[in-house]
Image (cartoon, rainbow, N blue to C red; front, side):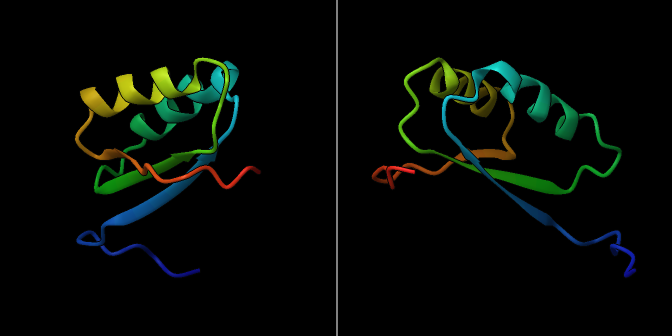
Length: 75
């Protein structure tokens, strides 16, 4: 397995849909990692629960968390 170079920035992609139950735990797990040179890109596919509000809260607090906003793909 190839080692990650200390100067490598990692891009993490996440898709969400009505994931409020575990979303905070998932993002907190990423934030707790010892390797800090990463960016999280998240697209929500039209959630009807509090997923979008949770994402906005994390994105406002952490400059390496980015919400990708484009039309819902409907699943």
